[in-house]
Length: 120
Image (cartoon, rainbow, N blue to C red; front, side, top):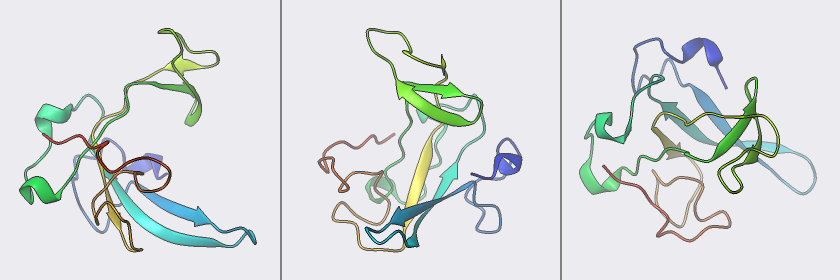
């Protein structure tokens, strides 16, 4: 995560990618797999830009528990077992490795079905 790039007013700027997703291989090596662009805090799915219609699958997370800048759990029965609930603003992945669900899918295809998509 590049926390300094959140809330900077720039969207989808290749010179200001908010997060990079790494794949950790069984031998411990890491591979850059995806750029993740994140809209500013307070933005919702109603605010996502239409950059390629159905090809771009924006998503957010409405169930994460945080301690500082780290996810430490998910809501259970509406409560965080640890940390505090904070919804995320919308985000989109741009995969540079093959993803069975497409180049803009969320983390689906990595243990989740492809139909777990959120579109504006």
